[in-house]
Length: 147
Image (cartoon, rainbow, N blue to C red):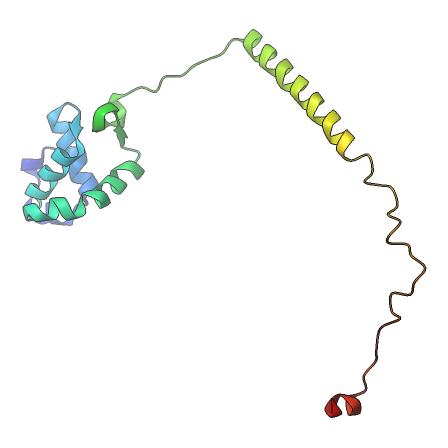
């Protein structure tokens, strides 16, 4: 279905992203965000000032909608027109990376062991023979009112 075939009442109920989808689909090419939103506003019969005041909200809407993809130089297009570049690494490359990571972990664990050498030893300051409760004063409820 094309935009000009959609009844005005239905267009009024459609979201900006739905209309933007039709705009990009009918254009058949990538477009700048401002151009897309200008066409959306024209279709919804909104004033030109609305484009400037709401462009950031439209950007947020487009960037969170998985139907659209942002391309280089500020262009946007439909996601289904673009294939993601999938990089498959060789098993040999993964083995090399794993070995390097394992070596890094071994070095880190040795450093951690050096730092924790004295962790389990008794702290002499904790085991003093002084009574920790020597300065403790117990106050009765009657004495509390007098204070």
